[in-house]
Length: 249
Image (cartoon, rainbow, N blue to C red; front, side, top):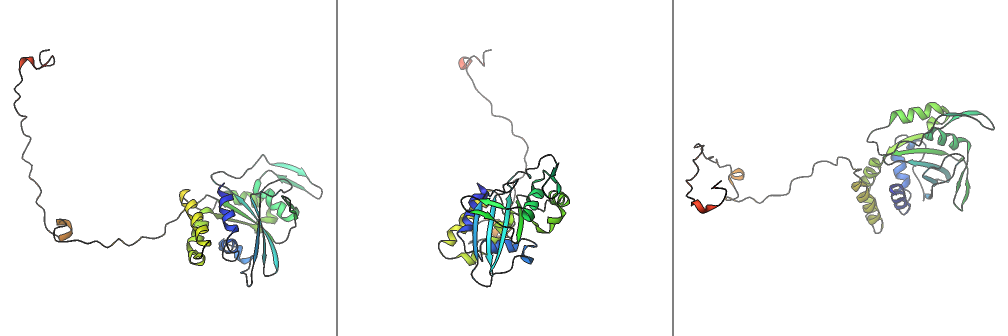
């Protein structure tokens, strides 16, 4: 649901400053995906079918008359859907299968994706984005996948839900007009509820109106604390015999 809500909202933002801008903010992606010089297009396909795996989102981007396909494998609090590594005899090669990211990297290079009622998508300029809830790069998961399929390691990139929030925070000025302001606000609210926010700096304290009688702390006056005078004796109690069973045993 987190993936569907966030990327459905991205779908209704301008492609240049929305999904393409976010992807270009991911480390390394900007070297492959260029900045749009004219109106760009973005199509979103959820849960496309690969040969062995089903990633979360397939983005079909047209940037400067070039077609790009970006596969998003999104996680919330789960790890990759790995299985026991098996050696598979394919039509052209024998390969190791079972690691989710390595399997998807192989499909990026050698396979096709089928999307619901839209046919197949080819292998044009494909990238795999691993989107997780980690606050820092999950090196072990990425290195394991790259080792199992080194030919595709240059097409594997990582980002986090925190970076989605940070990017939209920085781009808030680009989405001041209705309905984009509402869409971005909804995404940021959802990410904040999921606690995917980073430190945004210290806000200045509100102005305080302090008068002469507001207190000695604000006016700099000294305060005399009461002096300890010992423990006082309890008062003498005068109770009749008929005061109750407690007093009479």
